[in-house]
Structure formats: structure tokens, C-alpha cells
Amino acid sequence: MRLRRAWVSAFVLLAACLPATAEPVALDPRRSTAEFEVRAMWMFDIGGRFGAVTGEVEVDHAARSLRVRARIDVRGVSMRRASYEEWVKSEEFFDAQAHPYIEFESEPFPMATLDLGGDIVGRLTLRGMTRPMNLRLRPSQCPGAAALTCPVVADGVVQRSDFGMRTRRATLADKVRLHLSVLAVAANPG
Image 1 (tube, helix red, strand yellow):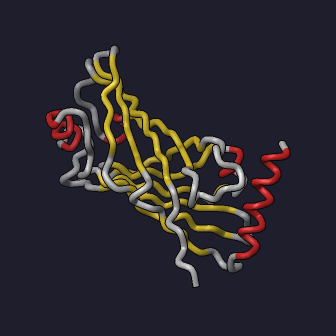
Image 2: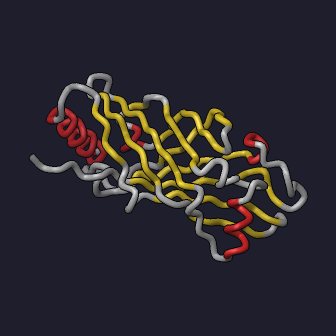
């Protein structure tokens, strides 16, 4: 409890030192990752890593809230087999040629969620379709550290059928699990 209060106090102090207007803080594409996993044949998981994760976190100091906008590069998917990569990039799955990015935009959520964890409500755009989505933010593993030094980790679930992916239902689960780990870009001094 004492550690949690110290982290929240440090974050509030940091927020108080920043300008009063809401400012965006960029996500670091070199240190941020997005992964996916889907169950095949009801026995094993097939997973991969997306390309670059870009975007920003808008910090509203007056409201003590945050809003996230993230863009994930589908064209850069990497998997353990080239044939799997080709398949998930095809029209049958992510359709990377027609829809090269997955985008997520959250509703504002309390700054304390960074420390304590909790749900982030937003909208996911995948294959040109936008649907409501909740991401579950994990509690911080680095109390007292901003997202510059400690990853912010979130998990979510997407139903393939909600985004027009209806093939291979007998061999491939409808549920796709997402895992994100993001860090912010350090501000330039002075």
C-alpha cells in the first residue's frame, strides 16, 4: 500500500510539473510490441508479432485522465513459419494489403489505472471495421516509474467473426488474444 501511494504521488508530482494543457506523449515504436495468438485444431496455439506500434497517449492534467491512440502495422507480422505469415496477411485473416493497420482509440481513463491496472474502454478498427473493445491493463511492475522506463502491458480478446473473418471455423478458434507492451518516447530536454 505504501509503495502504491509513493508511485501515485510521484506520478501526480510529475503531472504537476507539466503544462496544464493536455499534451500528447508519443509511443516508442522501437520498444513497443503487439502480439496475437489463436487456437488451432482445438489443441495448440499459433501466434505472431505485429510490426511497429506507433501512436500517442494524451495526458489531460486537469481531468487527471489519459487517452490512448495506437496504430499497429499488420504488414510487418512475423511468425515462426513464412507460410503462416502469408496466411495471416491474406484476405482470409488480417487482409494486410487492403487494411495495413489495426487502430485502437480509448475513451479517457483515470491516471491511477497505470498503477492499479483495470479496463480501458475504446474502439478497435480492424479490416476496415470498427467495434467496441476493452483492453485489460495490468498493474504496474515498476511503481514510481513512468511509462518511459517501464512497459505498460495490456491484454485483449477479439472475435474474428466480428471483423469478417469467418473461414476455417472447424479448425480455428473465433477468439484471437492480443498482448501489448508499450513504452513512451522520452521528451527532448530543453
